[in-house]
Length: 339
Ligand SMILES: [Zn+2]
Image (tube, rainbow, N blue to C red; front, side):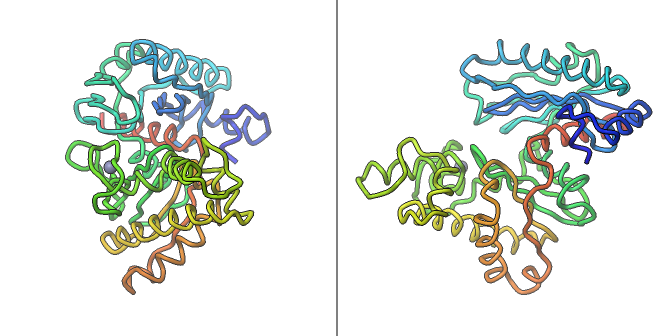
């Protein structure tokens, strides 16, 4: 029920939560996505207050977008204050990589062209006069799903977000895995087709270059352009491909089946490598639900080595659109806990 608060639906539960929120430590969470900016005030129970999201309009560049992000954060703070939540004591920032989490710098995020070495932590500290921390968005989503979502109580989990791109994060033996510079767990950049499609990361044949929402659409567009009969029209989205496949369109079914096969085989690799208790799948493409989940489950359970297959569950994410805001909140709360 916690998610009711941030979408502004007033219920007794939300009011109770707001009262409890006033006694709990709170932090401001900022999520810089390629499609949308999202902010909220997060309390230590993982509740989000004053959740707000606007389009990123990434063509406008960091000089315009960062002030808009900070203003959005202030909007969330005002809404949370009105709901009786205590004032934030820190700031957590979520963004796609590559970034340098320890230095607090966005190195050159793949989804934000032109953002080179942006010292986002320093900028946020100056703006809000609070301690701030930065982490990879998919890493934070893994953290949030582990603490509050589909992987609560599990020792090891991997998380994949299948949306504009494919990101990933992991909790291994109850510890969030970060990697040397905070970009570990890039599960979307495993080679699934040798010498295949060019990927944004500079290599060829990555999983992301086939099975991300963007590339499901691109593959459909190419098939449409080749003149094959289909109910799809260009430019096609992943959602349209899923829907057309479900209603029996042969071309869409071919693209969808290839997508789930590539995802399923790659996830089987990850399951064999990590032997997690649970694989959590989030991101826009997972709105297709069972149409995506069921075949991936079948492929993983049939293909993974026996002990790994026996141990693992494959589940859809539980936290929805607020997942990176919740994770950024967890990050900032952890930062306060060590100071
Ligand atoms: Zn790649």
